[in-house]
Length: 291
Length: 316
Image 1 (cartoon, chains in turn purple, brown):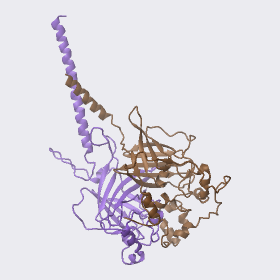
Image 2: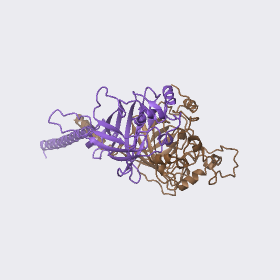
Image 3: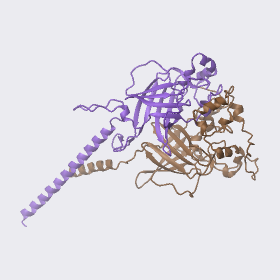
Image 4: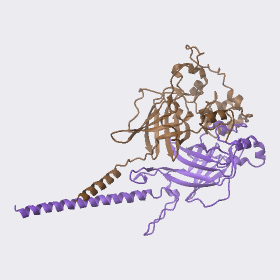
């Protein structure tokens, strides 16, 4: 083999190795780009109901509705499981029983002066069925989709209805009501990525929970013996569904109730519900301050 | 050429790192979490009244055992730590501290350690795929816990618990208890829900849920003291097995006298957990008691405030 042939062989081998490197590099770049696009696609829509950002080119596919994106099925009948604060929830407690609620002096004075019988005669029985207490009253919930972006939550105790609206909350103030204005948002479970923002789990069925923020409330009661909340109160809730051993479903509402007027700190409570197969036990009853 | 080599190596590292992401979601549960006694204030802080089992799905044996309970039980060394098994996490007043146990070789979390400030033994929740040991393995107050992630919720099954108490007024729990815990972190809040099954003493699962708030202002070295058996009642003879005979519980009527609650409520049972029980209260002609005289207010974990509120004083 001549020196020229020998050197030519080396050059060819070097070209071949360079070609392999280029191919590998191209492949790696494609994988990285694909991974990036994949993860950003998954990240999109974690907050269901919020308008998805439109791409610069080509018409965007219609964003999925909150109903279509639901990571968990809340619809159906749920019965309250009263294992916590039993004496204060299942029955109307005696005067002065405020244990557990972080009330201030103003609240204590108002509760001490409260007369349930008078309040009921004056038409205020449903004050104990506002957003601050309605989920803790013993009873049943019937949850349905009012439309593609609104969950309707009916309570048979006191015959109340909460509407949980997905999407951007209406700007400014709205007229206060007993159940107030509730803005809902799906929180999709994500995995933490060491190289960027959290991602949704590729290939996995979405899992997650519902977050609900409520304001614009009429004054009401946190306990039927007269512990009040005021018109500046608000509430944040996380609605989680767990599957119990045996397959039955639990709905747990981790709730934080804030009221600058009557509470020293956020009041935290977790109403628990168990799913029922149908509405055969649905039993609407009027508001009452005696039961 | 060197640049190309480095570029290739770097890109490969990124890709390999991405592909090796854990296939299941996990959130960081570690930290010090402060309790809030806003629900079940008395049960968790001072302890429930005697013979107050309302809302607990006791079966016949559970009720009989609970009614035989007397505080003189604490004179027996082997039972003095019995009220503090794993489920005391939700039934006690304390905050919790959670830390990961790392596998040094893989760099993955192999377990979560959940300790309490006082009384309760730390739970070790194994998340490395191992299974619980056989039924004859050692039973302790902490039990044996294995966990797995469902989305961002850590689902934990705890077994191998010793015979102990469900509540501090003598509701029993047996070594056959199986508790499923659900740990869900929502930003700065940690909600733990427990489903307690005990075929010996419960007729249905007993469900509870509490929320703790992140409180990393606590010193890392804050003392943790687990229960140590010691004689608490020196006036009880060591030969005594503390108990009430059937029908002889001297505290059986406390809840009726103090809060007007009928026996149908205070004796518990699955029916007391559901809304239909209001009809039973109506049938039993329940009326609210008069002015509250003790444990009237209440609120927080701050000791000074707790003392104030036990005296029913509220403050800013």
